[in-house]
Image (cartoon, rainbow, N blue to C red; front, side, top):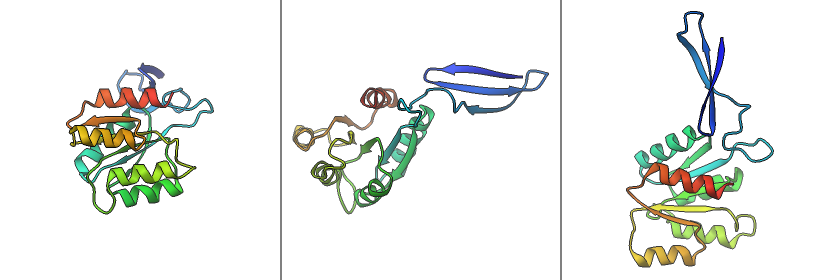
Length: 160
């Protein structure tokens, strides 16, 4: 028996034995979830040099139905964006090689990525850093520690 259960924007299909015990579950690929009007799943790039933060972002975004790529530096993020442009970037500030502000400014100078939504997720909560982000064309500024539900709310609203 196959049954479907809706969990917010996701629908999970579960295949059950005659006894009613779950055998297998998978996200239903035919359900809307976090998709564009043409059925494409939104792609998010999570960029942070702290692996536990990247993993937390990845787990929460994937559980909400997004396709997620990760990078641990600004330079790596730019390389990923060049070959597989995401629909949105979640970006840390303090990273090796190229910090988040440099990544943001580079994105805003390039015609192809000028409109790419960027959420800055950082431990820098000082007014000067926040102001610098807004001046650089930032779409959203969140500080660590962060609430994953709040982050997902911003992501969802920015990709509508």
